[in-house]
Image (cartoon, rainbow, N blue to C red):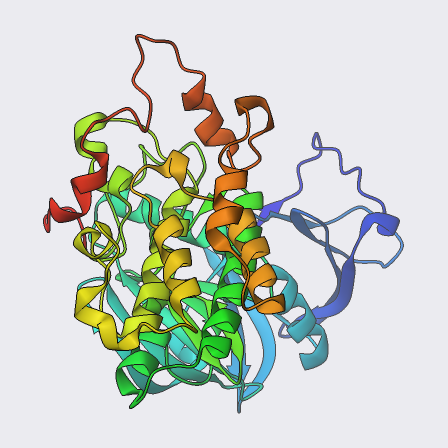
Length: 428
C-alpha cells in the first residue's frame, strides 16, 4: 500500500468505482473509519464517502500480495505491510466476501492454511500435489494445485503463465480459477472442485465399451472447450483423458500447466505433452525448429477418441493402414464412423488435419445423422482452393505462404512416421 503523494493526481471519480465498502482501522483511543473503493487496478481508502482524496492508494498487480483475517471461521478483515508495519482493517463479512471475489482474479493472497482446511490429496508428483480443501468461512469445497517452486526463474515464469491463462478464460467447459496463494515453497492455485473421476479413470473402470452416444457427447463438449480456447489464441498442449473431468454428462477441461498463447509455442516448453497424445509436429520441433498451431490439440483429442473407442492408447502404427487389428472386437457398423473421425483428426501432417471448429461442426452432423459420410465431408473440405480453405488457422496460413527458402511446419518428409520416434526425455 502506497501513501498518496501530493504530486500524484487522483482522477478516478466515484461513478467509475465498481465496488466500495466501509472499513475500520482500530486504534487504542479511537477507531478510524475509511471508505474503501475498488477501481479496475487500484484500491483507495478515503476518510469520506464523496471525496476522492484518498489517504492510501494500492496498485493492484498480479504480484501484489494481500492477507485475509479469519476468526472463528468468519472473514473479518485484511492486512498488509505498510512503512515497515502491518496495517489491519476490519469490515462486514458480506462486504469482505464481495471484495475477495473481485480481487481473486487480480492479485496473490498469503497464508493458504488460514483460509482453507485440508481434506485429502487427489494427486501427487514431482510438480507438487493437488488437494481438496474446504474454505473456513463459507464451507465451500475446492481443488488446490500446489506447484513446487524450484528457485528457477523459468519455472516461476511458467507457473505465472498458467495463472494468467486461467484468469483470462471463463467457459462452462473449462475449470474455473478462484484465487492464487503464494508461500516460500509453493504457488497454490485454487479452482472449483469437480465431482467424479477424470476420463482416464472412467475408461479404466468401465467393464464394457462406452456407448457411441456418450462418446459423441463427450467429444462435442471437449471441442466446445477447444473451440473457445483457440478463438482466444490459447493452445492447451496436453489434451488427454486424465485432464478431462466428466460427471453427470458434464465435461470440464483441466490442467493448463503446458498451455500457451499462440506465438509462444517455441518459447514456452516447445517440446511438451504426454506420451500417446502428442502430435508429430510437436515431437519433431526440436529438429525442425518450426512453429506449430492449434491443431496439436485436435490431434490429442483424436487420441482421446481412440481410447474411448478401444480402451487402449493410440499410436501411429494403429493408423498406418487404419485396420485397428488389435481392437477388431470394438469395430462394428455402428462405430466405424467414429474410427474414420479418429483417422482425420490424427493425420500426421497438420495441414491434412481439420481445425477444432470443423471437428465440432462434424460431430454435430454425426449426432444428427448416424449415417453421415465423413469421408465425403473430408474430401469436400480439403479440396478447396487455398483462398477458400476454411480449415486453416491463422498460424497455419503463415507457413503456407512462406518463401521457398523458408521451411514450412509441414515440409518435413518424415512427418507421417514421427509417432514411432518418440523421445521420453522431452515428454512428461
